[in-house]
Amino acid sequence: MLRDRRAGPVAVSAGSSGATGPAPSRAWLVPLLSALFVPVYASGFVVGKIATAHMAVPTVLLWRFLVALVVVLVAVVATRPALPRGRAWGHLVVTALLLQVGQFAFCYAGLAAGVPAGVTSLVLGMAPLLVGLLTPLVLSTRLGAAPVIGLIVGACGVYIVLSDRLGGDLGTTIVLPVLGALSMAAGTLYQKRFNDETPVATSVAVQMGTSLVVTAAAMPFLGAAWLPADAAGWWTSLWLGVVNSAGAFVLMFVLLRWRSTVHVSSLLNLVPAVTALAAVPILGEPLTLHAVAGLAVALLGMYIGLGLVGRRRRAAVPTRAT
Image (cartoon, rainbow, N blue to C red):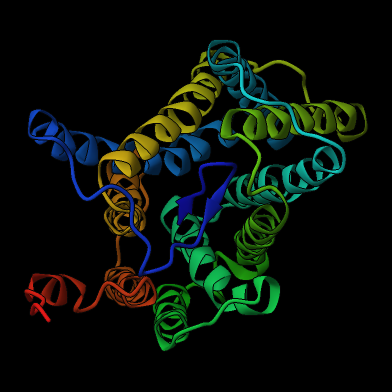
């Protein structure tokens, strides 16, 4: 999944690209930032699992949105972007409900219910391909064969991962991250349709502010504590708000500016595998043969869906002068 410059994660067209490459003085930074970006992004699932073990899901959401909003407001004060106009405010509110509240509420609810962090990451990792599949219906753009094939292959990989657990410890709880992925896809499409011209800092600030207000308004009816109860609750809240939200956001757009969108998409394909591996020593989640095989198939599906198969080979062929 890839975040659009104006809001949340978006599917990436295989043919799109950013800058042709970094300047020579920055060349050494690209591998370093790339290596840092993947674990920072993946940490949201692992730390989210820890957070939901120490506090209720509404409390996790409240503090994630609050900390992230503070960080984003600093960027708004520094850059002073243009404010939304007219209906743009309403569209940003709808995007926030889908892309922020919906996605993370279902994601954290699944983690709290026992869905492993690696499985959650894998299911949500299918959202960009789903966006690619639905884009022609919503945005009236043409769809190639790659997203369809990739989604089918990726879904097979997810099924392999879950095949030995659906009747056991997971049961119907797997529906929660699936709903999170659907909410992410819907929010992404809505954002691309209505908020594409809104400055990124403004968009994220409005989304985080809306999400915070909605979560705070719901707190009295959910019976959740307003404050984290222990040190683990506080440090996970800070991590999710600062590192996983703001940190991943900054790294992503630096890489987008210096390299292509395909480069960033390739890095995002590694997130489910890194999450699954990190969850073994940190969370004690098992890495079974089913999980390894299914993860490999799912990653192949994501790779195909983003149109990366054969791309480097084609790019290496020089174009004949006419």
